[in-house]
Image (cartoon, rainbow over all chains, first blue to last red):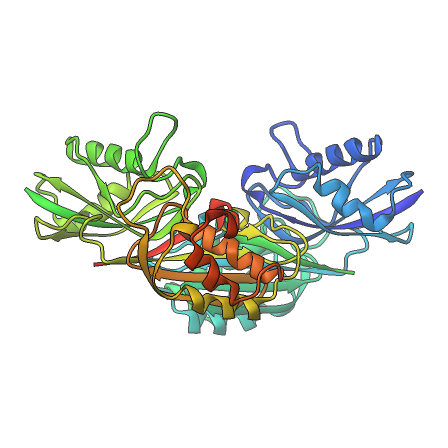
Length: 244
Length: 244
């Protein structure tokens, strides 16, 4: 039995996130169906994380066990021929039996994209969060540095998940400007539920001068969810890379 | 009665092109419906061109006559509140009574985007044409120059349109590379039916070395449709700007 690791790009617009559920079609379900059509096997595809409805991925990682004799690197094309156009397998490869897309992960990088202009976009509207008013990106950049490091991020977590600890290490948080787009890159050893989207919502409060960059320090130390910003929409969020 | 000019961005993925028709929903129809909801008037919205099904626009121009007292520049927000997210009015302004989005036009710029990598894209797949094999973009750039100028482009026209002459002036045709994207910009005083998409299809023959750059000269002078390349898909095409 082989353990196959796949790297997946997907447009999450039309899915109820990664994980299988009763309410709607998910990416996990689509990939498991494609494997069944390819090998005849019913497998559990393990994902590196549970992305929410509407969230995208450029480098999602998953793995599954198979008895198929299809060469490992051929799964890519075999599965792509069975998948809809909004899910693409970029790579398939055999990995050691103990590789687990979720538990073996050492960290992830997400990118959140804000479109900062008066009019919304028609083209690419599913990949950005539109913010009408002008944002102070210099202050937002200053605010970023207060998040970096090992902190208890309980102020930046939505309820509904049960985790042992809300301490996480943010290894990188920086902003890149591309025309009207503000791209917020964030890397950490792990993320709490909605953590990226709440951090971005808090950076937006800095961007509209409702918070000063240095206020971030206090919000982290006080640990009160209501002091942080709102959870911004999923459309702007994209899982860029998973580290192992 | 005022003459209102609107600048429109749209994602053509879910539309049967610009012009009203019986077979499906079009952008013209959606805008006329939005005007009816806003002013109560049934108007004819005149478009600068008839973009095909699946073609996008960043700067489409249209105009319509209205008796409404809504200030001209307020039509933008009024219409946007009635339009779906894939059609956005970027600007509305009053123009002289004789302004006609189509007849007053002096030229247009289109951009055709090719994604040139082995795997297709999931994210942004509706805005590109995926070409798997490596393209020789240097030869494609060399080929561009043979198109520029005033020529009879009858080899680069699909049947089904009746025009008096197939002579057009291409004022600019150049290629920009952005990572895996090949962006082909083309400006002319007017375009024949499918002209941009057939020119791109012909440039692709140069890109895979089935044609030499200098062959373009002969294809133009001979004027035979079958010597030119195929008409590439609409997804990669975007109307960038209309000149007046």
